[in-house]
Length: 315
Image (tube, rainbow, N blue to C red):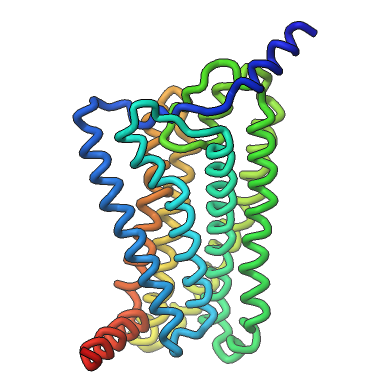
């Protein structure tokens, strides 16, 4: 009883946490701050720009761009959950984050990263229908189905996040308040707990399996069908066109999943490595996504040209 009382009091005393961030020399903080600032500025510019182009150009009123607009919104949102606080902490003496702030950060990050995984699977399915069943595309990828796929992605993200966040923050934290990371994430928070983490780790592992396996299977199966269909196309031009719309999506999937696997397969002994991997999918992926899609995509380039031409005529 005394032990549980002490645990309860330890838990109730945690009103804030300390985000340790990167363990580097203080003079490197300015460099890291500038790097974060540059990447975050590109994230804002790229994703707001992408959403603006998709909303203003009527030719981009198709399922693929509806998904892409949502992808830009998710990228913009989850990098904004992490980057501003991390940049403030480079200059802060205390490096603290309130308990509520930490809960909010983990909740939104967990929600949006899972939503992105499901959304990328929906985008792979969209490309599969577009290339393998082009005549039925407008019928099969109806506005209703697209809305349901996006809503379903957010719903799965929400369920997963509620489970992760509630299980993480009901742990008694008594080891320390210092989170060895630049944002509130499940694994660094679990390390601060003094209770048995078996159930937590099993839930995390099961959730990862339930989320990652189906989404990866959908992506792989869709692309196997796409590749076999594209190889049957006689004209080189037709092949090029089909592959160009898919290669950008494959690039985005590879970057995100590569970083996620690297992060979760990194042993606890190397926290700095997992921070670098986290940096990849919290900031580098949201920065690269609009670049990959706009540079590889003729429709987006044309829409951007139109907007710039319209601006010039107004001026």
